[in-house]
Image 1 (spheres, rainbow, N blue to C red):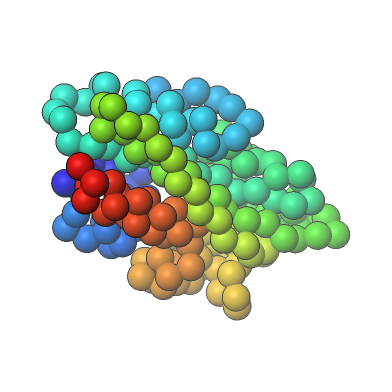
Image 2 (cartoon, rainbow, N blue to C red):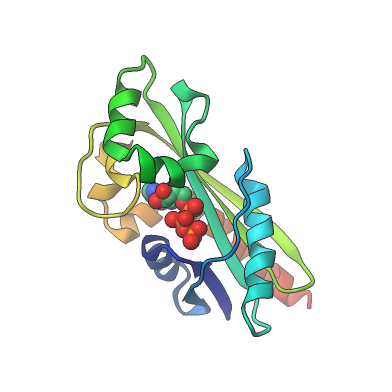
Amino acid sequence: MVRYVTSNPGKAREAAAYLGTDVETIDYEYLEPQADDLEPVARYGARAAFDGLSGDEPVIVDDAGLFIEAFDGFPGPYSSYVEDTLGIELVAEIARGATDQRASFRAVIGYCDGSVTETFAGRVRGQIVAPRGDGGFGYDPIFEHGDRTFAEMSVEEKNAHSHRARALERFAAWYDAHRESD
Ligand code: ITT
């Protein structure tokens, strides 16, 4: 059993739907350093969550963000702060004023079992649009992939395309091989 550690119920819902009974989701806030890249944040977070929680079961954390092409990837690792301060409507309005609306979501899964720490990245491309849909969470209403925003998709539909599902897929393949070699 792997523990998926997050304070975000939207992420927990998607991970549980993707990984099924192999995962237990735990609501726990671990120390997250600020960095220009997601990978070191996920790596550090996995270790911090493993050390902060009692128990020997491996943990995974998930650091994600929205990277807008016209803004050279901003807000990227600062997505949480920007969502809380500007809000997604204003992000969409500013991005739609630029000539290029392309963006991508990225997620990095950090894994730690006390002795091994690994990271797994996933990415999905799309474009910034005016908010549509009431599903999902965070920036989902302003991120269009194909002809729908992520907020217009069910959890299963979003998992068929998302950055998180791609990172979880890479993690799950590695973890199966890692367990077999133990
Ligand atoms: P934890 O760190 O506790 O897991 P968090 O919400 O702080 O939860 P992140 O730092 O990874 O998680 O999220 C950064 C921001 O990106 C935050 O504003 C999220 O709402 C947003 N976000 C992350 N994944 C997303 C997704 O799949 N769809 C829409 N927004 C997402």
